[in-house]
Image 1 (cartoon, rainbow, N blue to C red):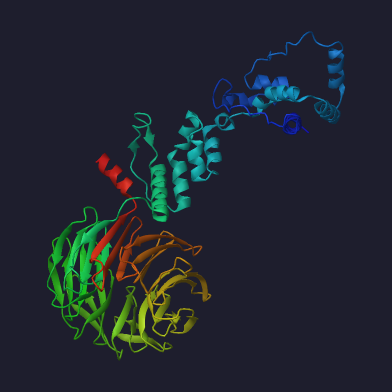
Image 2 (cartoon, rainbow, N blue to C red):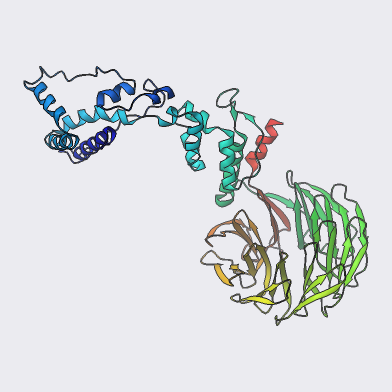
Length: 558
């Protein structure tokens, strides 16, 4: 056993004896030092390893002449005893020290600890070359790194390293850094690492999502007492469509209605949005393409002979499904109908388009996979025994939800049914698919999380805090699940555990007519369309911003 091992063993024995001494009170440890008088420069690492306690004290920068006990002259025979001790082997010394400690009083053990303990308080990070010190810090979790920065000035400099925080952000999935900001509140001229700022911002947003704060949501009132049937938002623009024949464009920052898009002669039932381009479908049998910035109707798309019930946008093409049983493929830039897909024998209720294949579900209980370029139906997916209301398509798998209570997973290339997911008791009104994880919302008031490859239901989001009525809309966001309901609430769930976290929105009229019809979420915002069917709640949009502090800082630096 080396010198350090021997010293640590002695210290452990003394501490153990002290903890069980006659007064029963542990001796308080000394205060840790970081680059104080006892700081060792990196050059001292080249010195020979200490072999005695005196050597160790010198290596740590302490005088060889430490404070001696002044209780009187040294006992006779002390030098002979020390010479005898030095003549013994290492194991013999340990045995002698063990016996000696057992015979010491508590005050004597305390004295030994006061002498020995400071020698273990070495700032090893500051002793290392900067590159090695940073490498050691890479093993700390971000929260521990933030704590380490509070140790001393040199540690703070290390813990502010931008490349170190870039790696931490990569581990946490943060891909965008913030510009350098001067840290005037701490020390004028000191710069905060952009990647550290990005991590702190993302941590704050995550906390705001999961725990909320005292801020009230911004309320946007419009559409009178009509139903908001569709909701989109992109950047700082929100677009709501209603059965009052209009769409409204709102500012997510100020909450003001910027413009009302008028032109439809029937209720608006579906919409899509990309940047500032909005496409809407109506009971007047047309689609309209709008410029949300100017409010102009760019194109009116004629062709359907009944209500346009669904649509899906990909690039510059939008595919619309109608109660006239057909689907149409339109060029958004020119307003031209490029293809018509016929084959359904009842209304088309839902559609998905990935730029290569079109998938549609209808009231004829069928799901169809199309090649839009040739207008050929490649597969008719049969198995549902009632109307198909919802679809998800990722280019490989088709997932369909039906009024028959089942969800079916299909292979898009072969048309084969891979899984039948059972457990819901009613209509599956909405779904979201990410990789192999599917989240489904149902009129039975539950939300379920599935693995589509195995067919296993991973979680049923219910329990004492479950919805009390049909789920109207749901969305994935940041490892969370958001679900809205006819019960007037928006609930937040942990996707991984299935645990209820909180009610993000709870209308005053919840349970007595208040409804949240639609929700849309980004990483930092949640927009809810709410109202009632009996006049108990005004029709409105609720906007919750989980990055208000970050936006305020950006405004302050402009």
